Amino acid sequence: MAEVPRVSVSQRPAPLDLQELIDSHGDRLLRSACLLCGDETEAQDLVQETFLQALRSADRFRGDSAVYTWLHGILLNLCRRHFRKGKRLVLAEDRVLRESFQPKPAEGLDQDFYATSLACAVQKLSPEHREVIVLRYYGNLKIQEIARQTGVSKGTVKSRLHYAVRCLEQLIPAEMNLFVS
Amino acid sequence: MNCRTFHGLLHEYLDETLDAELQGAARQHLQQCNACRNAFLREQAFATSMRQSLDRATAGLSLRPGMRQDVLDALGSKRPLLGAWRGAWQDLIASRPAGSVAALVGAALVLLCIQYYRRAPNEAARHGNAQTGHYSCVINVPISTRTHVFRLQGNAVVDSIADESSVADARLSEEREQPPPRP
Image 1 (cartoon, helix red, strand yellow):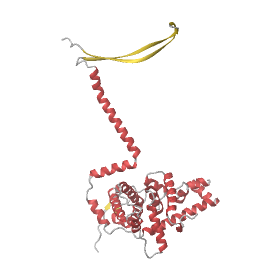
Image 2 (cartoon, each protein chain N blue to C red):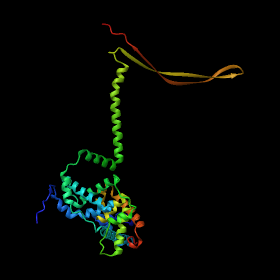
Image 3 (cartoon, each protein chain N blue to C red):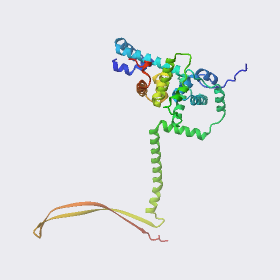
Image 4 (tube, one colour):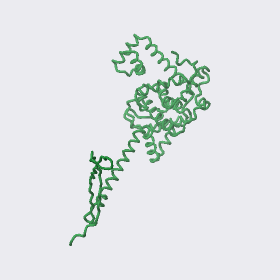
């Protein structure tokens, strides 16, 4: 088997390797991008641009956060630019979203339905609320990391999180029991 | 620590990003307060459910196979400089709208000041320039007007009962040609 040529960009903590970045973080970034923008094709393009920008600005990565967090910061900025350019889907069309979110067919149908409903409900949130939900509950980022990535205070992040959860409560089926008190 | 404070710090407590003293106080409060313990457990369960559901919803997605080569191809092609600058400006304006407006207003003020100070010497030259033989003179004269109020009895004026004065500024300008200097 022919050896795959490696592309490395020198960087202070450790050299970045494109193949390694794609293998380690590619799928997770894609899924996060898909949750943020609601369309798989556009999410693929956004992730490609994320890797591109990461390689171009590798010397600016100081290593004070995890590589995934840094990559996700780039992805988030690209998503925001993407929304500003008005390339966003008409999110009322659940059909388009459900095509993007296709859970594994072998698993429980109810759970698949709920999961897809949740992903569609997340798409109906405002961009600010959607960001914090995806970063917190999918990206598993800490509040201070979300604050750094979104450029707002920790208090604002917590407030947005609170209102985003309240909005989700209205949007997702009660049978999911996500908000059992 | 009371319940209100704990609720405000719940996320940071879950993240374990509080300083040691606050983290300890929050832990102690949790042991004593059932309501806060329930809120804490509920948030933990909610986070887990959300993570699992979002994982499940996106589990079918994976990167397209040619991604690495696409990135390498794009890395090799130079991005137009103008486009990059335009993108950077758009980002800056969108992320800091108030700051951008303030910067624009500031720039406009600086331009106005420059324009004003560039015109000032021309104005001075217009008002008085010995070389051209013209001079001008501006005199501010306050004009005081006295008002007498008379009292009438029948058709006859009896006396002046009061007087008021008002002052108005007047500006007189004169411009004339000076005689040419003697040789």
